[in-house]
Image (cartoon, rainbow, N blue to C red; front, side, top):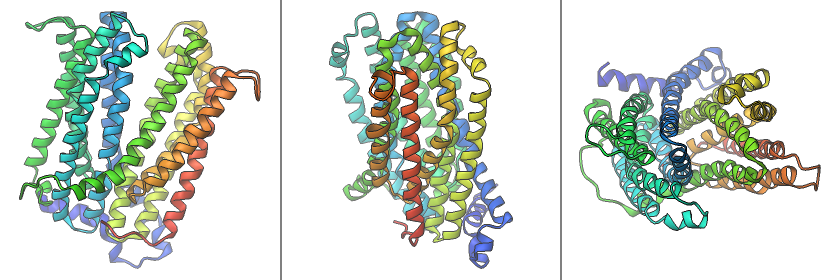
Length: 480
């Protein structure tokens, strides 16, 4: 398809509402809703595959480090737990690029997109420099946590190696947001697959020492991640440069130095996104730490249930990302009916698909636990926890969908407050009271924490949905 056909197709799909009366019947007609559903599937499916590929790369690191030695596996796990919050905060901030690009695209102001993306790339470079510096000064944390050798030395080596992947991750997020804001979501899928294909042999070479490379163990996982990430982002950059559709956005017409006003604009939207993701991720991490004194079997059961729910999480997450794009397009084109359809279809997809994961956990808890372990005690505990995990699938889907739509409006500050209230002021305290004390009920252990998680996610779903309903009642904001 040539660039003219691509642009025509994209613009028609976003702006065909101008061609017919904006009536309530048309807004919710079967044909209009069907078109919106196809748009969601076109956008969301590649995002889902890309996220699955990212998780597969992490799985490969875990398996290959574990086959080398248990100490290396533990060191990679510790290093990853420190790397992850730094990474998601950085990536979350840069996710603010997507709604702005989407709104510019929807309003047909393509020439503004390229200069804005350049500013996003400058910010990505700055944030990644700060992140690398942080990970190279993190050594005292290992002493504070009383982590001893060999886990300490391997973990620090892994962190120092993966630190150099963060600039590539940041640049990739800016380029990803550029592409996804235009409604083009397949490139990330392509280069995520490329990264995974490269990561596997690189792990083998650097962990075990082949082709003249010294044997590094778990530290080799870090260098493999860095190399595969840089190859992926270089491939993505070449793809963007080579494809004519991206040139429509004046990306390569001139070079701009960093502009403070634009950087602050991105940070205003992006910092709340980054901290929102950080808060949700740390809620689960804190629960894992609080459960540690209850024994290895309980911790193992909790972790395997959490791992499976993380796999399920990428389904509503992908839908939420697609909602950000579609809502941004609708706001840019001043198409309130499209925005309403996007919200309805997005919520319907999120709830429908999450119902399937919910039923799977309710009907097959022993089977799912048996995939991870053969220890009877761990399987029994995990099976009981899968019941609780199933119950939060729907509320999790709702809060992700609502948050995705709100990001399309670039409404991120108040949702951050609502998420903080839901998770850290509601879910975590309730989980601790139920799990570790007899204040309300005899201490329930991990089940009490999972009840707290369910309650926190449910509160978030209600509050974010009410916020979205309030935003939808107002006239659409002017795309900026």
